[in-house]
Image (tube, helix red, strand yellow):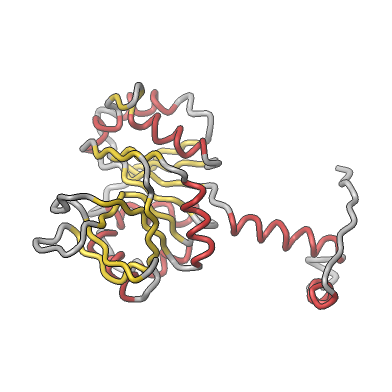
Amino acid sequence: MVKPKIAISLDNSLLKLIDSKVDGSVIRSRSQAVEYFLKKGLQEQSVSAAVLLLKGEHQPVALKQAKGMSLIRNQIGFFSKYGIRTVYIVTQHTKNMNLLLHEISNAGINVEIIEKQSRGNADALKAVKEKIAGNFIVMSGDTYNNFDLLKMVKKHVEAEKMATMGLMTREKTSSYGTAILDGDLIVDFEEKPRHYSTNIVNAGIYIFKPEIFELFGDAISLEKDLFPKLARMKQLVGFFTYGEYLHLA
């Protein structure tokens, strides 16, 4: 393939740094070095994969009508709208599997169902560990979200933390996980607390760096095991979605 030639101006120190990466084997020229690091930088700034964590018992919810089509089609359409190219659905085998396969058959993007018996959503998420190479989105399979996802991605990239959690406010918080913020950082997270001092709650959508799996250990639940740990480590950022949200389960 013939590549178009362009002329660019670079700071001299940056040019020296690029030249230092030319090793004659993997990177053979200055042009190849510029192309390699430009691609790498753009990949790190974007998100192309998403994971839906769908409990087997919630598959009827995913097939339920919401906003004129099934919830699962809404979710895939939302991801596709914001440039997601691959969606992994982690679930369990049930009698509804054929109906689920039919709903995703004309998705327009790559959708893969992964069947995994799991003890919780963190345990389920481990099923995609070997498939993930960059930042990725995770959403609860029983929720409908509609907001500017690109803004959340931008926040995640700029914050340079392990995870970003979608947030919203609710008057009644007893059925949600609640977050305490210090600026943009979530410094405390508790799943469905009996006593609460905040109306800021979890919107069921997250962005993770791929290195997040190193922190899983024996984690079973994202909300009970992983998010409190990330909050203590100051590695969890909050992002207010300011959009539509429905919890259908």
